[in-house]
Amino acid sequence: MMKAITKFLSSALILALAISLVACSGNNRVRKPAELTEVKNQFELTPVWTAKVSSSDPFNFHLAVAGDGVYAASHNGDLTKLDVMTGKKVWSTDVPEKLSVGPGSDGSTTVVVSGKGTVYAFDDTGKRIWDVNIGSEVLTEPVVAAGVVVIRALDNRFIGLDAKTGKQRWIYQRQQSSLSLRVGYGMLVISDQVIVTGFAGGRFGMIALANGGLIWETPISFPKGFSEIERLNDVTAKPSMEGDVLCAVSYQGRIGCGQARGGNLLWFKDYSSFTGTAQSPDMVFSANEKSIVTAFASKDGSQIWESTKLQNRDVGEPLAIGRVLLMGDAQGYIHAFDQSNGEMVARVRHDSSPITAAPIAVGGLILVTSQGGKIAAYSPK
Image 1 (cartoon, rainbow, N blue to C red):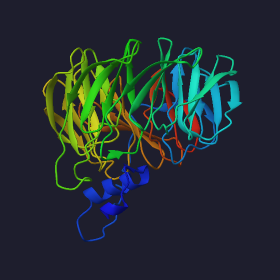
Image 2 (cartoon, rainbow, N blue to C red):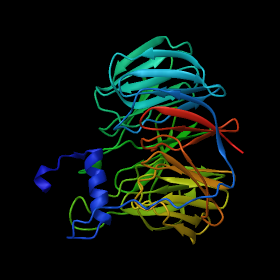
Image 3 (cartoon, rainbow, N blue to C red):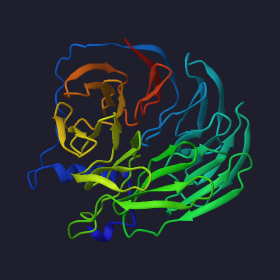
Image 4 (spheres, rainbow, N blue to C red):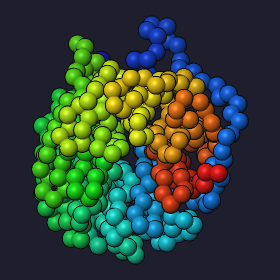
C-alpha cells in the first residue's frame, strides 16, 4: 500500500483515509449520515438573490468579497463579478484554461490560477491585465492585499507578485515535507499587513505581506503513530481570529488558541479537523472528521457543548455570526446552531450539491456557494 503512495495524496484519497480512520476496523461498515430531525426555525434565512456559475466539483472554490462586489469562478474557467447587494452581474469573462482554485480580489485586481499554474489577473472592469506561470500546481485561493498577490504553490513556495504588473516582489520557500495533504491551505489576511496560515507537520505561522518574511511560527501538534499516513497532522484549514486571539486546528492533531502577536499558545487539546475553526468573542467552534461539532472556551479550551446531529454529513467550513454558528453539508443544507448551547435553531436547503466553503457575512447578508455553482444571499430574519 505504501509503495503506491506518492509524495502528495489526492483530495479523494485523503477523504477516503479520513473515513477509514473513523470507521470500525475490519467490519466494512459504511458511514451513514445522521438523519435530519425536524427543526422549528427560530429565524428564517430568506433568499434575497440567487445566481449561478458553472460547477467547481470536485474542487472547493470559495467566493471573494471586496468592496461592493462578490467574485466567483468555476473549474471550466468562468470568472464573474456580481453586485453584492443585488446579485446582478457586473461583468463576466472566460479564462483560457481550466481553474484549480477560486478567485482572490481586493476590488481593483482579481486573480485566479489555472490547473497548470498560470496566474491570471483582471482589473475592475474584467479586462485581463497580466498573466504569469509560477511553475507549480496551486490549490490554495490567492490573496490580494496591500498591492501584493500572494500565491501559495504545492511545492511549498509562497510567491508575492505585484498586483498591477505581475512581477515577482518576493518569495518565501518552505522545506518540502516527506508526505503532505494535497489540499488547499487557507490564508487569513490581517489588517492588510500579514497573513496567518498553516503548514505541514502541525505548525502555523505569520508572514509579512510587504516582503514575505516569516514573523513567527509555532507548533500546534506533533506527528503520532508509526506509518507516514498515521503521522500526517497538517494545519490545512484557514486559522480564525477574534480580537487578539488566533485559533487553528490540524488534521490528526490538535486544536488550540494563542496570541496573535507572538503565536504563543494559550491552550491546546487533541482534536482532528480539516474544515477549520470559527470564533465568537468567548468561544471557538470546529467540526471533526465525523462532523461532530464542538464548542470550546477560547480562553482555556474547556468544552462548552458537543453536537452529533450532523454526524457523518460531511459538513463544510463554519461561520460564527451574531449568536449562531452556520455550516453547510454534503447534501446542500445550511444548518444554524445556537452558539451558547448547540441547539439547532434553523435549517434551509440551499442546493443539492455539497457546501464546503464557509458562508460569508457582509452588509447584513449571508453569502453561500455550493460546489454545483449556486450562489445565494440570505437575509436572517
